[in-house]
Image 1 (cartoon, one colour):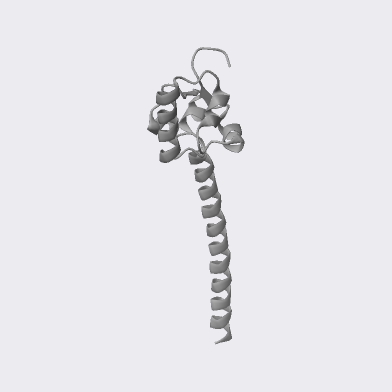
Image 2: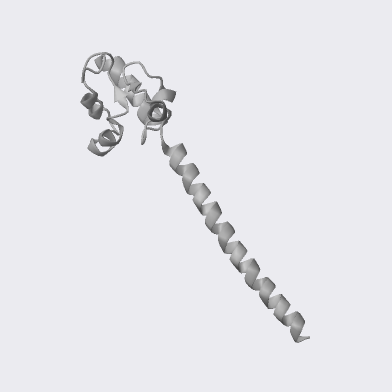
Length: 114
């Protein structure tokens, strides 16, 4: 009978270790997935998003730019004309210095040097 109890004890320890290893692996894979999916498509491909011509969907590829802010960017450029410098995007409600710092290397206003 003692022999069976030891076998169960070893089995329970093995299950705990396997469960821990499995949990760590799932956590690692999930963090890798989130890190990869957090990168905008434009950053992954090396292309910048032109804030003068981008659609709302394209603008939403930028970090911290959701549907509402993307629409405000489009409305702003319709009302005020094209952005001349990327810094002008901070005039759009919802885009402050912190958001600008996160997106400045991902955006352009076109062929003109910035």
